[in-house]
Image 1 (cartoon, rainbow, N blue to C red):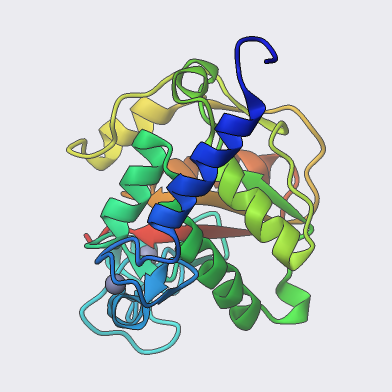
Image 2: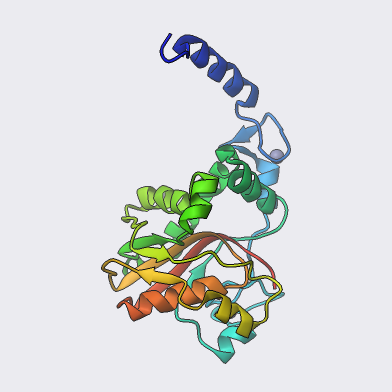
Length: 242
Ligand SMILES: [Zn+2]
Ligand SMILES: [Zn+2]
């Protein structure tokens, strides 16, 4: 017994638990899954098929390079957004179970596919020099125990061999939810929220789990551009439809 824990019984318990979950699809519980998803569920994931070239907002139809109304009105401070899924069933539930309940097995199938997607999309000259996870306010991070954006950045950073810097941007204060606010209120809500406190290379990618209105990544990208970044990409798992 070490500190009241019996290592052997812990090990056995873990083995029993993993046998119970072993290889089942995380969404339909089919036993025929590979990397956490069965073939049917993987094919049914809501792919972001038509989207704005700049901010990846899902569109009913789009030709390559087409931009949404908001990006046509004001070109965003980032070059492009690479976001493979729409924030809809079952991707919303998979991200939610991971983010709010800490169940990492729900996110693993998405992470593997996400790395592959990025690898296919990026030309060698478009590869960022640094991945910057969207920063979380320290209090929220302490409450949750982890920053999901940092988890995702570290996973894809390892797969694509790109360094991750989780401490070059700080979130000064907590902000209220952006949804339901108009454009002007969103910008007031986010004014001076990010502080860049490290050297920023020319080519970076901001990594996050979900891009909702796009206001946060716009403000964060602006702060990175002011700090010297010239080519800023947004990498996220899912984008909320407008
Ligand atoms: Zn399934
Ligand atoms: Zn757009």
